[in-house]
Amino acid sequence: MNLQHWRLLVAVADASNISRGAEVTGMTQSAASQAIAQLESSLGFPLFVRERRQIGITALGEQVIEHARTMVAQLNAIRELADAHRGLKGERIRLASFPSVTSTLLPGLLRSFKRLHPDMDVVVLEGTDEEVEAWLAADTVELGVVMNPAPGRADVILGQDAWVAVMPASSSQASANGITLQELADQPFVLATGGCVVNGRSLIEQAGHQLTDVRVKVRDWISACLLVREGMGVALVPESALPAELRGLTVLPVIPAVHREFGLVCSRAGKASDATQILLKGVRKGQGHQAAC
Image (tube, rainbow, N blue to C red; front, side, top):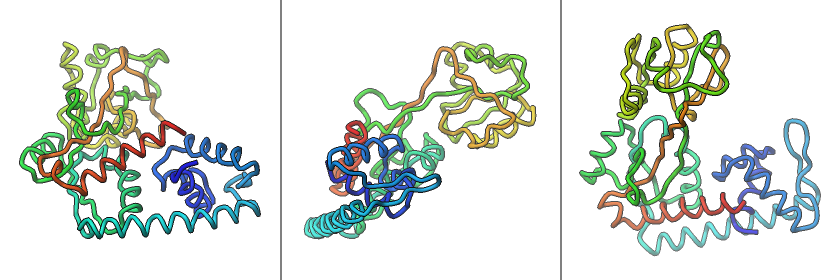
C-alpha cells in the first residue's frame, strides 16, 4: 500500500466511478483497477461493490475511506507547511507545450501537481514545437514539452504514441496489416500539422518520398479526420489525436511503425527553480507508481 492508493480510494469513492477516480489521481483505468484489487486482497475484504454504471461502497469500505480521507488531508497540510517554509507559496511555473500534448498528457499531470501543491501555480503557454524550443532557449519558460528529444536531454519522458494512417472507410486500399509511407505519399492527401514541424509531410520526406497531391492543409488533427471522412483524401495523424468517433473512417498502422516521443525539458531558469524541480520529482514519482501498479 502507498499514498497513491489511498488517494485513489478517496477519488473513486467521491466519483462513484473507477475511471473518473483514476483520472483525478493521474492513473490509467487499468492501473487503478489493479491497485484497488491489490488493496482489497491485502485488507482481506471488498471495499467497493461493482454495479452496472457506477460502484458502491461496502460498510467496511466506508470506514477505510474515512481514515484515508483523514490521512490524505493531514499529509496535504504537512506538505503545504513545508512549501510555505521553503518560500514556495505563490510560486509560478511556466510550462510551454503544443496543442496535441496540452489536451492529452498535461491535464492529469497538472491536476496531480495542483492537488499536492495548491499554493503553487502552473501557467501553460501553447505554441508550435519551434516556439517551445525558442521559449526554452530564451528562459521565457521553466519547462517545455519537446518532441523527440535527443537522448539524455529530457528531464522526464512523458510518453509516446504511434503515427497512424486515416482513410475513408470505403477505401479499397484499406488493409488490416497496415500501409507504408510510400503508399500514402501517392494518394490525395489531407495534410495536418498539429502546429508541429514533425507532421505527415516531414515524415514522408524523411522516408525518401514526396507528397504528390496535397488537397488541403490544416493545423487541427480532428479537422483533418473530418475531411478524410468527407472523401477529401487520406491523412497521417498521431494515434492519441484521433477523434472519439471513428464512424466512416478506417485507421491503419504505418508499416514500419513510426512513433513520436514527448519529454519535459528544463530551461536554465527551470533548473534553478525549486518549484520546477518539485514538479519534475512528482512526475517521476507518479510514473513509478504507474509502473508498480
